[in-house]
Amino acid sequence: MLAPTPTSLAALIKVAGRRWSIEDSFPSGKGLTGLDEHQVRRYPSWARWAVLVMLAHAVLAVAAAEQPDLPEDTGLLPLTRNEIAHLAAIAPLARLYPPGHHHRWSIWRRRHQHRAQTMPLPAMGVR
Image 1 (spheres, helix red, strand yellow):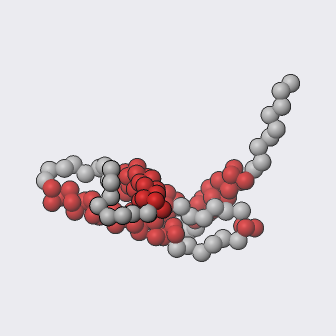
Image 2 (cartoon, rainbow, N blue to C red):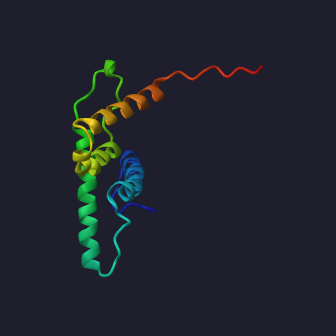
Image 3 (cartoon, helix red, strand yellow):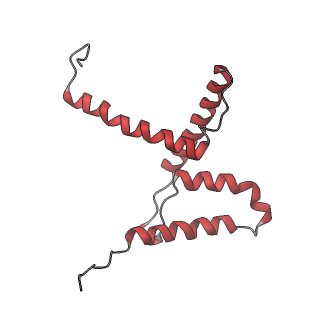
């Protein structure tokens, strides 16, 4: 397919590369913000739902991107969109647990994930 105007190969590759991030946003939008949980009756209600879900997804993405960098010696992974959504979802339950419980649980989980990612794999020798 030809472009209507002359386009550089670098621009075409950049546009093709955007497809992955767009396709990645649909499953995460479904899982994190409930994109697939609306019962479509009419277009206006679906459009409002889709806009709210995309806004929530954008808030999670910005919150994950704008956090300060953690020093290497903390042994923690930075907050991800999933972790931020989880902390926001359990916020109403904060009164049922001791103060700081969810924060400590998040730190434990992120430290555990960091250890799992940085642990060297054992040598798998044949005996």
